Length: 245
Picture (cartoon, rainbow, N blue to C red):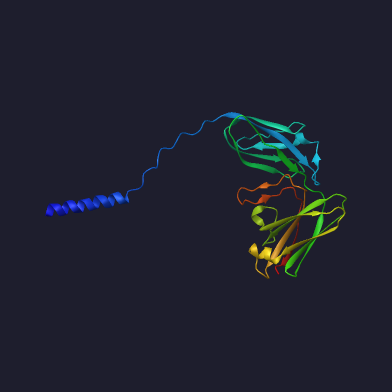
């Protein structure tokens, strides 16, 4: 009888230990795929503040691809090529004096020749002033500027501190609006509900950073950290605040 009890308890211990054992691997991991060498090429386009193509100065753009240390420049038609690129994930940063820098983020290169075209927009040259007011269930942001026979653009970034800028981490909302030809005053109406949805409370202070913005901004790209759009084709902001209705 004693031997039977001993055997029974031994079986219980074994079953308990088996139930506590860590789960084994689900299966073997396959080998990494093959790596190839090829090229990444494309054309760079430049645009002025009105959204029209600029046909000169294309060969002054600086391009830097991740994993390398040397800038390359396109030819005078805007064509560029990176040779001896291995299979992998890459970014290209494009910049030029007077233009908003742009990134082509996290694109996959497998083999052969991959085409990646890049656009940059001029940083606008026109200046503006802004005034803000609250009332009637919305905030009004009024943009004042000199008349121009061409359509232009402004962008408003909305934040909870005076440090609001075009940097994605600093703003909660943003709005783009065109300035009609020859207009000198353009109002933005931002509803209280939009501000509530962004986390503002009625009676709190909201800050607006207003920039001159390149029309149809070709330099805009997605920020990988926040998922928001980065707008680099802007000039120095005018900042004002209002009370949330």
